[in-house]
Length: 79
Figure 1: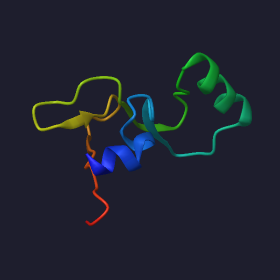
Figure 2 (figure 1 turned 90 degrees about the vertical axis):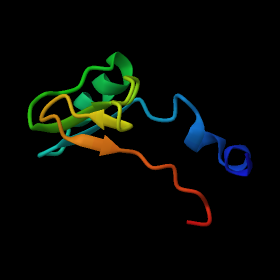
Figure 3 (figure 1 turned 135 degrees about the horizontal axis):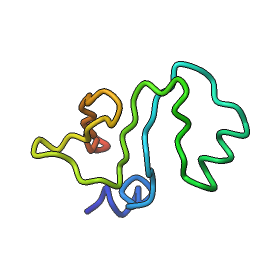
Figure 4 (figure 1 turned 45 degrees about the horizontal axis):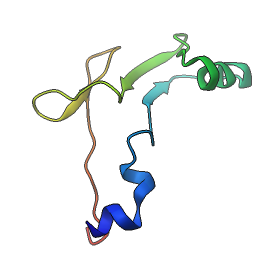
């Protein structure tokens, strides 16, 4: 489709691996470890959605910390 052709980074399967929220700033060492080893620091972690897992029946990704749903909507350029 038009959207996929002009915005391939947004539909690429490896664009985002995880989405996480912390209650604190991460140190440069923690960020480096996340990018090289893929480990998520648990200190202050409020929510964590691994986007490589399949969504539930409502197309929501389920938070591994507090079970909060994350719904990703594909936004088209005219919306």
